[in-house]
Image 1 (cartoon, rainbow, N blue to C red):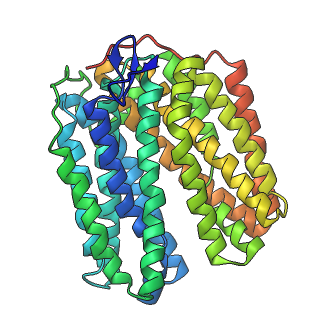
Image 2 (image 1 turned 180 degrees about the vertical axis):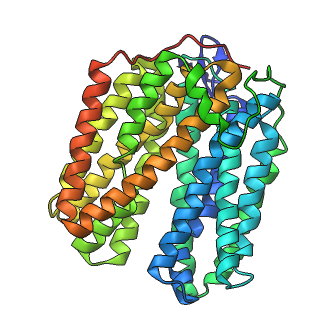
Length: 409
């Protein structure tokens, strides 16, 4: 693997890794994430200002994210059945883009529920098809690099978004609805970029149509390697609660909203900078080694948050957390696609991401219960212990970085 002096792309055995398609999809994700994360610090405050209680906000986010999660499997399977990816990618990003300004049109609860769910549905429509398209652009030996590069630009958007929102509110405090209209600009740019992409029709999946939940049947035909991998990933997801709990603990320790948001932005920045290098490392050292190293870092972070860390220690922990995320997010997607059958790649991704969303929802409920009825120390300690158990599962089981898949499409 070397860096060509003529081109700013990394090559592997004279093959370009970061292809035009990979670069464009990564830029699409960057602009889409700027749009979404512009609203991250705004939505809770805006909903509160129009009369939503904490309970209603929680229900809204729960319904919206569950919709995104459960629909990933269905649309992933549909993508495989049709043998195409781009129509789903275009529709998904378009739904998310138009939902941004729609949030500011009316303040009726049903309208807010509809629009927020539409935004998350867009994510459900596009995710599996987009990741399958990225997978088609790589060989098994270069997938971690491809997914790491994509995750890096995606997370750059997640860093820019909230920073822009905070800057806007600093100069124009309270003008929340304006931000919804501003968010439409990067959102629609992401959609326009997709029209510069082309794809070749893939062999269609032979899976039967079935109902909305028929993608769950994929587990019957999945490879043993895929089943072992997903079993470990879902056990981890079942106790890996929302990052909001880390932010809640940060706020409780520091008592400062600005420090809390700064810590979140810092985490995303580290995540963005580390994703691409760790993706390259994953292809060089092996996906399993990098992923399990990430689990070690995760356990350290949650063990640290179990106590009462100082502000300096919190930022150190968020730095480690950014490295953990970079060592697992893109790596896990590369690993999953390396264990999936080519014509069912989107279904395999959709099955896992749908199950992961359900597990994450349960994990957040568990974390909230432990925090409410015990304390934050129990919440974070439990998660750290489970992370160690998952680490032992991967180290002792027969899960390997299977590289016996098809070449790029």
